[in-house]
Length: 179
Image 1 (cartoon, rainbow, N blue to C red):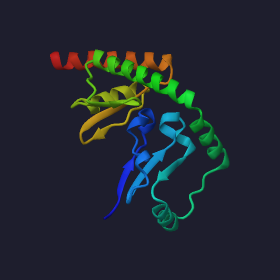
Image 2: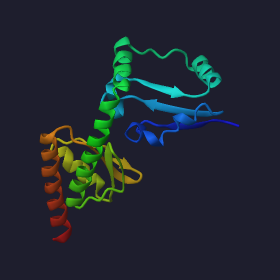
Image 3: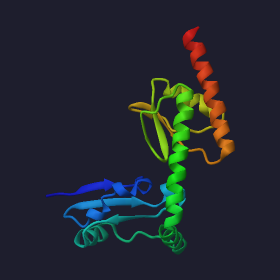
Image 4: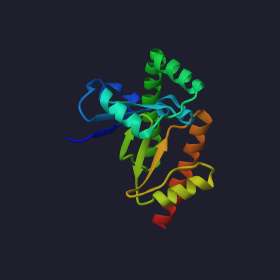
């Protein structure tokens, strides 16, 4: 019948939505990455949930994927720390709400979100992207649709830098469009 491939890279923030508990179903492949939720993207660790026969086929086709022992140890330790997961989820929800408020206060309405970032689709995305870069804040610009994802600032200093930058951009934008 074919395969259904689900990318659950961001699912750790809302584990109740994961389809992993539905595995193994025929043809269902679930990809999970470790880094996003744990803030360890550089660790290069992930896994696949699928039927044993399908896992064997994938292994035969793809070959071994080298994972360092430190990465495995960090991954196992982090995955077992369920109290940290709960605290992290609560903090991410709080910080995501704070980011949404900050964007709204600066005339940028998020059009999509998850606890890890807010997505802003706007015709001004290129301008905002350039203005952020001029202030030393790197963002990712998407062209279709024209948009910017805003990740959560790491610390209070970064929150203040983003707030200052967005206020500056908002003033420039309204001065240019009003005058």
